[in-house]
Image 1 (tube, rainbow, N blue to C red):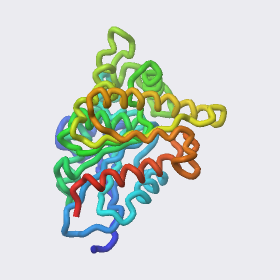
Image 2 (image 1 turned 120 degrees about the vertical axis):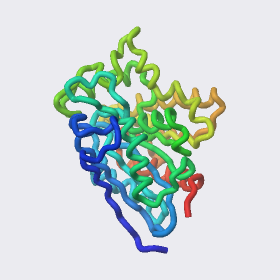
Image 3 (image 1 turned 60 degrees about the vertical axis):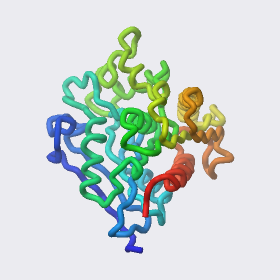
Amino acid sequence: MGARQRAHLHLPGEVRSGPGLQRAAGPGLGRAHHHGHFAGRVRRRRRHPVHYTLHGAPDHPDTVRNKVITERATEGLPLITVTPNGGARGWYSNWVNPGALGRQNWETFHLDQLIPLVDANLKTVATKEGRAISGHSMGGFGAFHYAEHRPDLFSYVGSFSGDLDFNTEMRAAVVGSELLEQYGTPAVAADAVFGSPVWPFDGVWNEQSAAQHVRSLRGLGVAMYAGDGGDLTVDPVLAVAENRVRQTALVAAANLTAEGIPYRFADYHDGSSWAEGCTGKHSQQACLQADMNDFVKLIMKRLRHP
């Protein structure tokens, strides 16, 4: 076995290979930072699978919490983990009306540029048999969204309390991320990412809602994780948030069942049986650590690795 390694990928704004990544693209893409690491013991001369894991909103890829969760889950495993910058409100999508921010083509950037860049610079298994993708909250949507659009790239997809169904509540959450300063300044229009959320002008929202387009996941491994918020009077904002995203997972599960696509759904309710310290709230580290631990075990059984 080779020595234990850590690698951090940093892509300055000057790195570009097409229209999806431009220096003039605005703060979301102008200076793109990507955290990646070899977590575990890896063989220097062997090719390794890659797990892309997407952060939520308004999170960042290189926070201590995100690093801890992935490194604990992959300790001792021959697996490369890449956590790309998705922007505090990028929604892992090519924005419809970015306005003065300029082009915000997150999907193009990640799928058409970042993945080839990683494969070109690291010893990866550069096929779908060597890739998995997961994400938390906004990133859970992003993971399903990317896997549904490009099932040729991934063999496993996971959502950790993801916003999978663009129902009225989730649309309000997305619009809030566009309008509230804590998600980024300057604020952008309510129709910036997916266009107008109001019928009959909401066609893009319907097209991108992950729970309604699971058919293309046939043949992939699929996993979802969610709590129900537990006691909704304790930390009510995060409790209710988790309770509502769980409903989007139930919609996705029903549609997967209707399509005859097998999946794992860890529906852990108040978290008491899932992990110590997990009480079923949104964005709890104990819950997310258990989610990641379980997902990594699943993908290592399926991904091609040394």
